[in-house]
Image 1: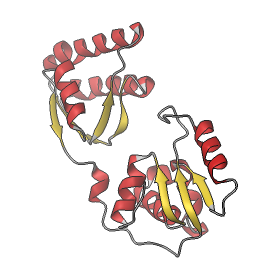
Image 2 (image 1 turned 135 degrees about the horizontal axis):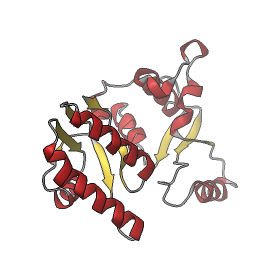
Image 3 (image 1 turned 90 degrees about the vertical axis):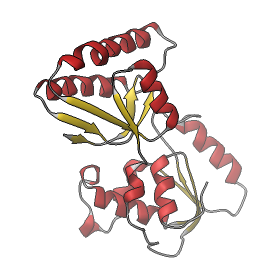
Length: 209
């Protein structure tokens, strides 16, 4: 079983991770070999609830999983994430591989730019400053200038596809990539705090921040 990666392994997105562990227990109990695609890992040990969750997961990987007939291999896209997993779960097989978005073929610009800057900023809990604060800084900085700009986030890429091409972009990687290319082509400069927008702009041979 091969399942998609992302940035939600650990305590930051605890609900998703708890659900994943329940599914993995069932898959490994059924004797499957399970390989995770590249993920990011984050364990916050500043609260008692997170420490308890980590302790429970250590029991899962170190005591329960070795007794199950299946096999688990996790891949990570950062050295420090690999180090954390090896430290917390010594029996877990961990490998470092590049993010799979680098396997997308070259992406071509769709049009001449329509605005000076496209801001692609997070609206979820991983936004460092907070989305409202980001918008405030953007507006105050550019209010009196002649710079034109637009602000988006990842979930809006499907809106920029031609009407006949629109579909469930969340489950169609090709449409998602096309939508991202349409969006990124709108600006002369891209400023983003999302990894995959950065990777896609690299694949388009564009400078960005």
